[in-house]
Length: 454
Image 1 (cartoon, rainbow, N blue to C red):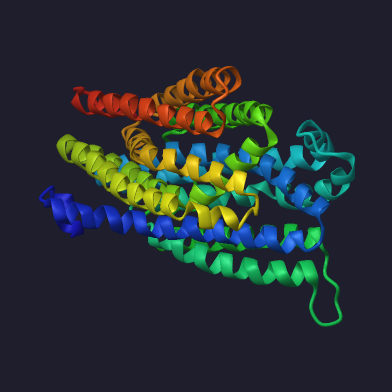
Image 2: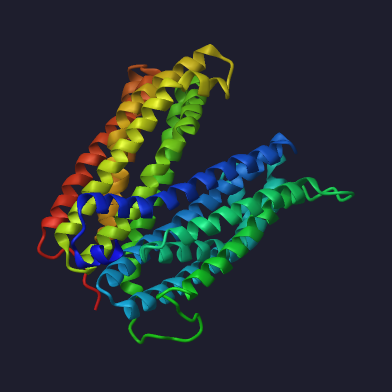
């Protein structure tokens, strides 16, 4: 199958198999992360509510760090995928090594900031006084070794961009299983040892990140992208093209997170019940996004590799086909969650009013799933083609121009409640999907579809 792909002679059925072979491992990996996050919260909740809040505020900051590391991974994936598609593994290896060093320096810098300014950062995030002390303990344990968060993220991106999504999945399975065991032992203790409480939760997270980093690097060393961290293998610098692709992706994620905070602030102004129903609906539907994220990774890799090989038509077909597969997956899942929304909502609350609000939200979301699927995958396809600015623009317009303004008009002015919140979200996804589709078609039709890296 790989030989046929490289020769540009793949049928539609073969392309679907190639797409799923890349996407499914990433879906499984993300699913495991979601489950472990749930179990982690469950364990910490047995210590106390202050500890849950402490972990929550700490992880909010860590999510910003991860967004920055993921953004660098997007630039890395785009450049490596095109180099691999062109058969230039020397160039791909040089990009992998240089992106690793950039990630390492970024991780070290954020680790130092976290060491000396942990309390100030958590105060800025609004941590209450009774949460702050526990929050600083947890945050410093997980954030000071940000080096390993950054390296684990970039190593996963390097492997996926070369078409190996199985290795990150396998590492993810073992790391998450170890995480669950360490979580329990280090939080609650074993035998006569009482454990470390919230500090144990932090140490469990940091230990498995070190393990994951080491194992992922071993996988890279066994691949065609093997490189030495200490021995320089290329005189050419790829720092500028890496940053040129990564900075818009980083800006997109930061804009999105700031916008989401502002957006949620408007939702809570509607009423506490609407805010609670919105959060419950978001938790219920979160699993439906996993196929989109996995297929977006496949789109980035395949579009980049085909462009690198000079096969623009195949690149275009892979991008569209991956998007339509996502539409099918996510539409089915969205409808299933809508039909079972009453049962799912009752797991979180016994209040009938909120349950009905959740049903309304998921009903609207079921119709928005095709547009969300399109926007997720086409953003990945554009990033694979070297266009990280269009997804950034779509996020700016979607979050600030549609969601924030829409919430104010539909919910605060016309009092549409939860229906208005999720209708605004659906309009956002519709407009993003149209914009990104036009940008993708334009990119593929242009004479120069690749950012040349000299």
